[in-house]
Image (cartoon, rainbow, N blue to C red):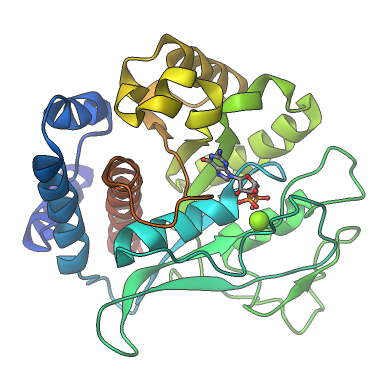
Length: 308
Ligand SMILES: Nc1nc2c(ncn2[C@@H]2O[C@H](COP(=O)(O)OP(=O)(O)O)[C@@H](O)[C@H]2O)c(=O)[nH]1
Ligand SMILES: [Mg+2]
């Protein structure tokens, strides 16, 4: 049964032009572009983009794959969404999602952000919930029970969270009987490469609680390691060094050890933060990450649809 589902799923992905890049082959994928000239890199980036454009979701009544970002304040969650948007649109899409002060925000409303396609009123079939950052003090940041409720699809879009009390089952925005459409199909844990070691154990524990819940529900998980430019001068100078930098490998190891995520499920990226024009190396890393995220989210939703 599981075997069958797996075959069906990979056939569907091939049909959709979304042949999955094996997570373990990230180095090779990048390696293919190493030493190539910019023209060839642009071709690789275009190819990644084409496969995303061709991807069509064909799972029952699921019209969008829902991806949830979680992680400490200032780890680059909003920037990651904006950067993926920039890589896909081919021009800078910095918008209100980034809090440039990096400061604390005290209210958070559940919203699923769409990515525009090239035609008017047309969107990619995936959306991102950019959750408020986790804080060490239990009275600040989004409550882990609420993160669990988002995973399960219990919270309606537009609900404003209370950092002290998680949503009550009596609330009008509490959905009692969520379907596969309402659920999260991939959990993204976002950690900053430059100060992973400084993140408090309390925040890491909160992240692990949510990851544990996702694991119990079978929801796939990926970690995004941002700020690789800040963590390694070599990489800051040339992003192509990201997979050969010892410093980055060390940071990925810390990320893997602290969060309990396998190394091959960690995607290092540099987000757009000051660049005005697109950078092909940044785009390739971002597009590779999103292509894999979509593939595993799609796989999960398909398997769930078969099982229900
Ligand atoms: N150098 C660098 N700065 C980044 C990167 N990603 C995000 N930033 C900056 O880090 C700050 C916090 O990012 P933000 O996306 O608001 O974090 P959030 O709180 O997790 O949503 C912002 O000033 C961003 O411009 C990155 O990859 N490299
Ligand atoms: Mg943010």
